[in-house]
Length: 499
Image 1 (tube, helix red, strand yellow):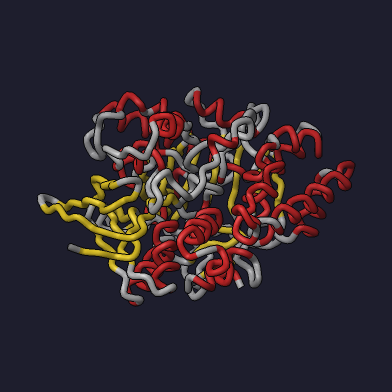
Image 2 (cartoon, rainbow, N blue to C red):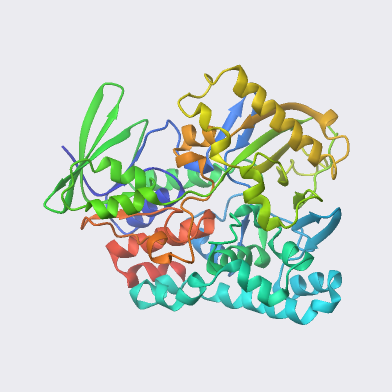
């Protein structure tokens, strides 16, 4: 019988960070990961000699003293080869064939926007100050009693689009402010203001890429966990969580024909809440009403992704991210609905940082939102066995994306040496994301009590972590890991990690 203080199911960044926190606090920990490699959406993958990231593109708030820097210093991740994007233009938004650069730093951010919209300079200053104020509250769920969420209720309950419309008016300014938000789902009826403001604020503070693979983050965490005596069971899948009188007694795991029962005082699931509940097959403590509520939660959209290997010295490296929207699009807030109709109308274009001293990019990623409904007809297929129709579908999508990207990167298609594509089905099958969702459960400002989940489950010693709880992305998931571990170690013990 194997017995641990804590067992973590899933090795996404949230699960690994929980394991790191608990191991560093002196607990014996074990991480169970069904794949041969750790990382979840931070995995890297190879296609021949080429290596691409699954879901990592850039992070915010990593400058000295900023929140992610404080977290990553604790996790031992600041020694990685971080590369700062252009502070004078870390993001570039193309709207109606005009270009708008966004600058780092709240003052510079407001000044740059005001140069494009001089008649709205006061509204822009107020908006920038609002972002900064929201950012100052990001640790409230940890530092304040009751997880601090009550102090943020007003922001969770406020509709992001309505707030922006009232603050800066409808039109180009609103679209520019929102135009970098393919890193979250702009859903006009439901998006909470807190989600929009907190994520955008972190990138206004500072923006960074890694030189090399994004999987360096999770590989470093995994190595640190093992050095502290923790175990990582790669290639083992959790198949059932056993419950006894309201307490998780063990987790059954299997690999090939081998089955084992792992025992732990605490169990943390880095899987989606829906998947976690499926593992609780015969729990008498999870009421049917709770299962129905969780299973009815809607998922955010996924992405169609092009991973490009570029010809040598063909495409100059640009030290920013580019967001392109078709001139026909009425508002960037319509991308979700238009993509649900199968249209390609918005792109996120990123490049991997080249080797030191090189001016040209070797790799480029192009992403466009994609509804699961577009690929649902192939839902019962597996990777590599989806058929000719699916292959042709991806080729058409790739061509549409490249045609749009060429509007701002001339001759891109003739500069591509190799092109690889993926859809929400790919993300579903490789990282276990329901419907290939990019950002987890869709938070709804109209029903926040149902869509904002707590770390604690109906079972006394089972906890949730990951992007489905509070905020998504690396910053949001890292903060949630601390919030989850505070349920086990106590709030005061976890707060010190932020200092």
